[in-house]
Length: 154
Image (cartoon, rainbow, N blue to C red; front, top):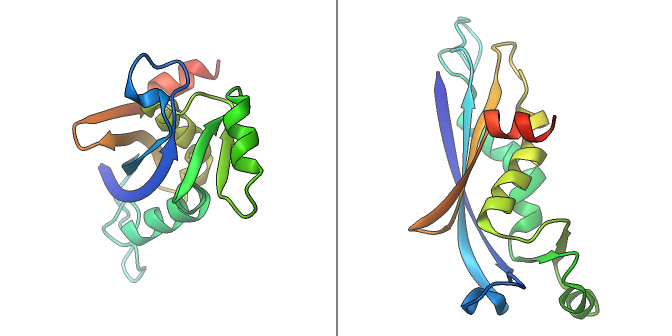
C-alpha cells in the first residue's frame, strides 16, 4: 500500500548560475509530498489498525526534522560564499547552508536523504519512504524516488 502526506513551507533561495530570474534572491511557497509504502496494519485494538502509518505521525516526523528547519529560512548553497556571508552576518537570520545548489531537484533529494531513515519500519510493517515530491511552484516539481536515491548512495 502507498500513502502520501502533503506539507507546505515558505523559503528563499537563489540559483547562482541560473541564466534568468532565479539567480536573484527570491522565495517560494514550497509543497512537500511524502509518499510511504508498507503493509496495512491489521491489529485490533491498536490506534494504527487499518493504516500504513497515521498521517499525523507522518506530518510530525517531517515537521520536526525538515519543515520546521526550512520554513521561513533562506536555503543557501555553501559555494555561494558572498550570499552565505551576507545572510549569516545578520543576527538571528534563519539561514540553512546546503552542500548543494538549492534547485527543486537537489532539495527533493536532500529531503529524501534526511527523511529516509526516520520512516524505516516504524510499526514492523515494512514501512519505507518511496518518494519525496517537492513543488517549487504549483506547476513545477521534482521527484526523489527510492530506486534513484538507492543507486546514488552506492
